[in-house]
Image 1: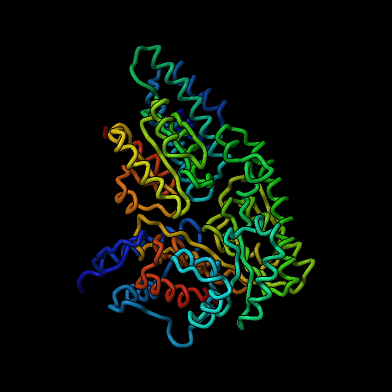
Image 2: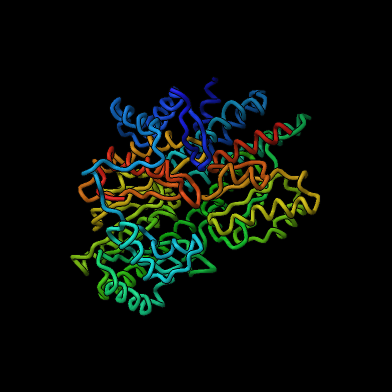
Length: 217
Length: 348
């Protein structure tokens, strides 16, 4: 790995946005490919940030700052790709809608997921907590999200995730979206039972599984 | 040896070969040892756990002489979860007289100190009736639950709205304000119930809202200890490590974020806890042998580091118990036996 890629990774781990931007600029000035430094420098950095968060060695404010640094460099590198006539974006990510379901006001896990998805280049539409199924679907339709992710912390509210699946089917919209379910009482069994596409044990897993699903088409 | 029937962390049945069982035990142990920087299981532990999972008994129990104290947190509320609409005091007597509880816990349906504050006089009356009705120690339990102090439920801005916007300074200030509010409520409610005769208290699911939640609990405990030197308070945690939602809060000169059970217990004791309840989360994507090996490693490290009694939390999604409404007795009893016999616990 080149020294610059190592520095790119370190800049993200250090949550140093200015340094990350400087490295991105140096790479571009030297005629480097934008995707190269993203995939070999910045993405490994943000991946390690996610892993450290999951182990309790890095905390939410640092995760947020790392996400901001990541977003800043991907903006710069995406613009460079556009200028040089390359198609696409510096990250393969898409748009995701996130909400805590109706009747549930727990949003810590959702907040972590929002930060983690942003850090990995996703455009996140965060509807907040205690959100009606109808409002979730309306928002997804309006903002063009590809993924709908819902969180439920209570056994008494996880039924809303089932209601979302049923409502999407009734509205003939189910195939349009990738659905993700998460929350303390939520399991892979529950996801299978209600027909959700992805179950996420934690925020990091959620990002990995959504990315895999989107790349699979 | 044929296939070994056990479960995944979500409760679904799974069959493992002897080699797979051993591998899952080793992997679970290694994961905890790596994360907590604590010793993993030794060969004798692996033999114990392999035997535990390969025996054909539907239900297992501890060996004679290894019995420990059993306490049921939120006991009065859990009957309703199973659609049994018994009045709270009846439930306490059922736990005491039929379920082998050594201590019983009264709690309000909202199970948080903040909503109890305006109705504490009603809770005092119920507690006093409970003290007249039961024989075993009767404790009062609730959660610090810092989430209740954010708008629209409370006076503080919601850090989980501020943080994703990058407003880190404002989010941290909000957490610090929430700590002050929670300390006031916990001290008021616990003090009132103590003066009504409660035998002890449970600060339950400490850390559910992250490091600020832990700090509020410890600071409240300090104040209670100063005011009531003989008060008995158990600190029961919410997760295996303290989530760093603020990230910079300290207690006793140590940063709270990221502390694992063996690092948490000393601070709880310093604050004034007389019992510590560690939590190890169940991973639903892994098998129960993987989860149990991991739980034993963390819990034993905590038990060894502690000079106060340790009562591990076991229930839906913690203590190697699957994430199911009705924990299957085969794995629940195996997890209970292993935690008691391998970790030197004082209670569950």
